[in-house]
Length: 352
Image 1 (tube, rainbow, N blue to C red):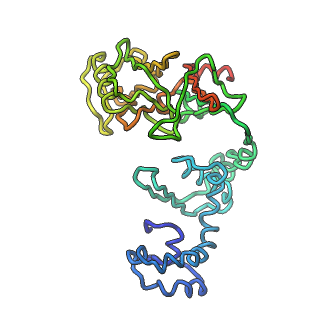
Image 2: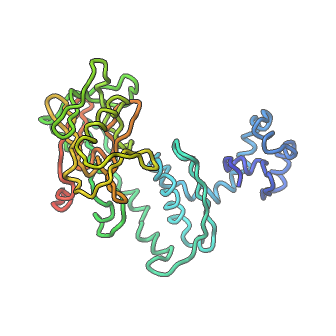
Image 3: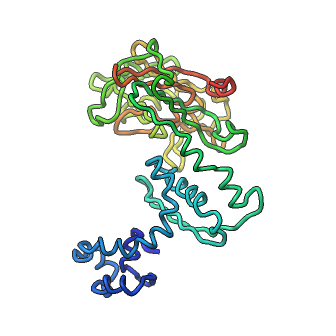
């Protein structure tokens, strides 16, 4: 398979691959049939004739790609989930004819390495038959059940340290991010502080902090230190600027008996089997309120070690894992943000 777009494959960059096109299409593409793969990338004439190439590719696109675009088009960009929502769309639209077909999954990687893999689909036996999977997913009903909300003022994001499908009564790993809008938002004005657009990233809202406390000890802050932090569920880990991250590691190191080491992913780790609750908590002082990050999200236990879910970054961000067991509310009109610690599992049990 070539590392090019679907249309370009149909457009004549064969490189050992044959494309099934009719005579009319061959005529349109004949002037470019002798181009090598590298030449096709540089050809201005081919670029000008892209519309003709798209017309040639359209029937193939409609048959092979379009059935996988339902959920991504309806919902929008979901980053990694976009690829698998496309697969969900394919099963929804083509479950009666997918058996023994081969599916190619391709992702540009969203900043990471692009990935392509393929697999062959089997018909399967109930309850894992294609028809039953499509029935259980019920994609059409779920898309229709969405609510359009106008005139939003408040939004709250809460990230729970629980497994997503445990909520549904089954056991699979993952986390659930709950977003509520408008009058349903659990925004608490009494637990709020001013927020502002970040000077380097105007689309992001940030909060000024006055202290970061590890256990009972404050991190040294220099007068010119960046004291703004963004609360962002689109970022997985918590990020701190270089000096802040260095000082935080030193304070955590003082409170753990084993020497630290960096694992294969560059994460700061400690060999220990102590309970997560006994590790030093990390608290952001926002002035009128304090926000203590849940140790469920600050430390991750794997292979006999606890690793910090905090890394060095260009700006300060409390990421998705740092917001576990927290309710984060944004009041866009008043430019305030509320932060409250909570117990997501208990909330789920109580139907909140």
